[in-house]
Image (cartoon, rainbow, N blue to C red; front, side):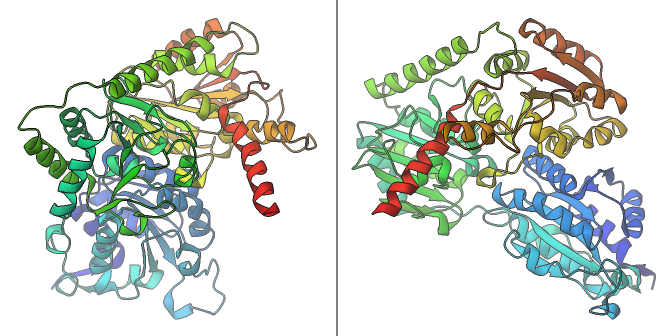
Length: 567
């Protein structure tokens, strides 16, 4: 019987899983690379291991399938950890893979020896340390099963060097079809709870639907719109759920953040795939009416009732549950749709008014450029085939409400949900462009975020991934400096150089670069960048004095904490 080594088995098992691309940084991976090339798997070699995991996360968010990141042992797997933590908080199925000192040398002080298990314990769903070559297919299958089951998330596969090099008979390491070791069935909600939820929403005077990233991971956008149209209920989104419903849909009420949103005061609120964390004020505050009835639907039962009491909790897949809710509501309504109400008109008119106000405030011709004007120009340049990747603090707060998402996943926050990870924008963009080469990919980030992974412009150049990166350059760590100013701290460690030219940095790598100081030149610069056919960086000088709503959150939080500890 033919012999096969561990490295070859990895390439074959990844191919068996339908993997088309892996993001990596070299070192001790050549045997795996050989097999990937033989199996037709594209290898995108990055400039930092964190970026490899970020790119795999972007790829997963664009495809709703696992992204793969491969790194070497020791410093490689340590460097990858922030990217995997971002995938964890984004609920992204990322298959992290690393090599490991040969098991026969464990504990002896080999070069790059490092035990990754404890580091990754809190940021992965599962970790596997495979010391048997014949079990490589089993470990890979287990990794994919965990990554794609229930609440999706990252895993780590750790392969010692001897596992990769040693050979076994092919018959000792069988590779089975994915359907034979995992299910893609969607758990449906309890029928009795489904009926109660539908009745509560239909009896409500001010019903609302709140969505987050769970809608996108369940690929439930069509089912969401069908149900919302039947019951005629406005839909708002937490930042992770933006693009779960098109922003121009008549029932889209826009974003919800902290204590505001067009469905504030709803008497019945259906929360789909929502985590009530800080960006939703932990489920507390003026957004929620005192007697609101909360229906929580989540694939993760541990999230149901977390931080806020509920009226009904439905464990299940958002897509499956929405199908049930639509059928139940349809039966109650006798096949008709619920007519418009003053509440629905109020939410629609308020959402439109907010958008109009935001655009009006984003029309300044002043120099330095108002970051809101920059956001408006970029959003107007974007078309219905654009992915918008946000990375940063103030600039994300300025631009996100103005971007009109048109299809599921078209808006991507590279910050990893509540993690607040910075620097992921460029590698996220590379991952998305790899998954969707026919789409336009725009990355907007602050100057602080940009340099954290700016070297990946070289990756984009080498692999011909055209992404357009817009740097809102106010020469500071904006949210930090604004917090210092608002809370009367010393003005230290938050200013950045005005002399650095990020456009020239990009040009040094062969990319397109342009320096923009006039708001009237923004659209022209965007067009020239896109027409270049190259990865591009626009260094746009913006006004450092313009604060975002998020800056004031720090003041509110400080006041709350001081008051809390006085009690």
